[in-house]
Length: 183
Length: 109
Ligand SMILES: [Zn+2]
Image (tube, rainbow over the protein chains, first blue to last red):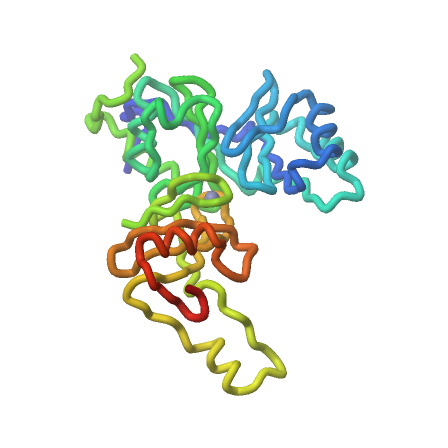
């Protein structure tokens, strides 16, 4: 019924992103070492997401992080972190197949997200470097910007079709509002 | 619409990001309890016009349970606080006392 070619931001579902959920004591030295070992520096602060060229690590809750990487590296990274956390109360799990990842690109990504999520998308309130867990329509989701014109959205894969359809509707050509546009 | 600041992730979450969890600070009575205690644990709830304490969960967010103190009549929020407590922190009680002198709720005041 809806055709993605008629949207005013580009929209695609990306299946190449590996996702690892990490539950642990975020103050743990072993965890810090593990994160350094895979090539990242400090852990993200509350609601932040830190990135290197190959990895991103987002703050999900006071005892949970989500690591994003290329899907072919997931198994090795899970092993490395799990080895470091041996003996600590923790959980390191590949959830790539349980999550869906959408990428929005364009000048109007802020307003498209604002149509669906109860979040203030003004650049003074939300910007690159922050990861926000919220809802899109009726489903739980999280999003972050890797730059001013690229937004990443993740949700449970079981509701990916709903997410895809509501994004297409929110971004339908002709429904532009013209706020917060970068270009 | 209610807006609570989640004490765990710091987000000012509106009601649509939250799930209600009913009355706060209930003491559970389970196997071995008297019929009166078990009945009261299961069914007897406060329904005040004014100061009230509730549990909420940041379900479309960080997922954590927390406590909230608010006024059921004006929807004014006095504050939110950790789930890991058996009673409201003094700071929250003081805030309520400033705005609703003489308030009481169950055995708190
Ligand atoms: Zn929260």
